[in-house]
Length: 202
Ligand SMILES: CC(C)(COP(=O)(O)OP(=O)(O)OC[C@H]1O[C@@H](n2cnc3c(N)ncnc32)[C@H](O)[C@@H]1OP(=O)(O)O)[C@@H](O)C(=O)NCCC(=O)NCCS
Image (cartoon, rainbow, N blue to C red; front, side):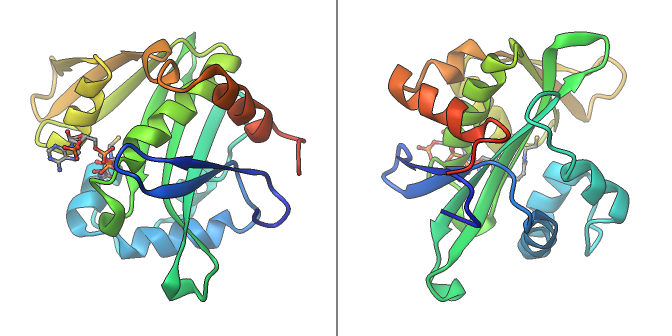
C-alpha cells in the first residue's frame, strides 16, 4: 500500500517481487528523483534528451494520467536505501492517439539498477491489461534504432518493428495489446483493472 492507493503483488519472470500501482500524489517528486538517477543512455532512450532534470512541461504531461486516455502503471520494490519504504523503479504508460482512439503510444522506463529482471516486460503486460479495459487495442512505440533493449522486449511480444521512412535513426513499433495482456491469468487481469481504475482506493 502507498498513501492508501491499491497495489498488487506480482513476481516478474526472473523472480523479482514487485508491487504494481496506479498514480500517487507523490509522483511529481518520484518522477523527478528517478529521472535524475537514470543513466545517460536510459535517459536519452526514453526522453531523447540528456537534460539533468525533467522540465515542467514534460512533468505536467507525465502527471496527466486519467486512466482513460493516458493510462499508467508503476512498479515498486521494498528498498533498503529508502528505510524500508517503497521505491518506484519503473513505469509504463500509454497515451491514446488523437484521431485513432483504439491506439495509444507506449513508453516504458525501468531504473538502471533494476533492468534485465523482467520489470519492463511485466509493466507492459500490466498496462496492456488495463488498456484493453478502456478499449485500447494497439500500442505504437517510437524508439531509437539503437535501442536493443526495448526492441528485444517488444519483439518478445511479437511486435512489428519498421524503420521510420523519414528518419532512419527511429524505429516505429506496433503491438496488439491482446498479446501482453494475455500473459496474465484472468483473475490477476481482473484485479489489475479494478485496482488501477480511478476512484477505487483500498
Ligand atoms: C527497455 C526497458 C524498459 C526494458 O526493461 P527491462 O525491465 O530491463 O526488460 P526485461 O527485463 O523485461 O527484458 C526482457 C527481455 O528483453 C531482452 N532485453 C532487455 N534488455 C536488453 C538489453 N539491454 N539487451 C538485449 N536484450 C535485452 C532480453 O531478452 C530480456 O530477457 P532476459 O533478460 O531474460 O534475456 C529498459 O531497458 C529501459 O528502461 N530502458 C531505458 C528507457 C527506454 O529505452 N525505454 C523505451 C523507450 S519507449
